[in-house]
Amino acid sequence: MAYQLEVVDLTHLPPADAILSPQEQTYFETLRFPKRRSEWLGGRFALKQLVSRALDKADLHTIEVLPQESGKPTLTVGEKTVSLAYSITHSNGFAVAAVSADEKLIGIDLEKIEHRIAAWATDFFHPDELTENSDEFLTALWTQKEALVKLLGTGLSLRSNEVCMVAGKPRFAGRALEIYKSLGEPEITVKTDKWPTGFMFSVAVGK
Image 1 (tube, rainbow, N blue to C red):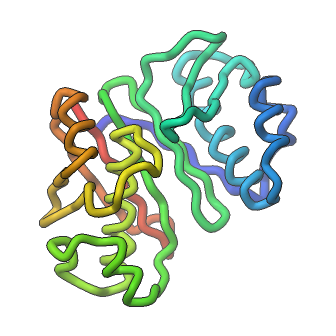
Image 2 (image 1 turned 90 degrees about the vertical axis):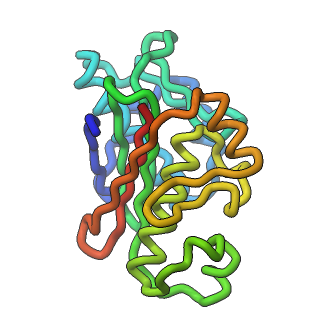
């Protein structure tokens, strides 16, 4: 796995107009809730810093990360699409971005380890996935599934049982399987760490 990460503390963000392009600023101003605004800005700030270093682009305003209907944002530099694989996630005061020039596809997810009601597990996971029921295991499994969804580039449009992690291996069904096949059935590797303290972080890459 060859990728770079950038972690941003959402309590220490620069002003929006210091990093956003005019188009990004317009979208940012449509976000009503402060939590959503800081998460959105933090994710863009993290990704822009990575892209700036990778492509030697000092002006963050020229790097645009704009939403699209599929859910996965588009990344352009000077209005030109870049070849980097990229992904963004945020959770409980942190935003994280990843980029890779070597991997074809990448998806990441960060979640705080918390106890959740039993119905959440039965609603969100396939029975084949539920080989344990500890908070750490379920949170790790959640991050793995979300990282796979982001790798496929589908946003939140898939049903949770269409993307599974069974015995450490991805398994797709329905529309997720169709998308996976359309991508050329890449070899996918998923890595999960208990990082930072109190969180689970997963990265999925496709070659």
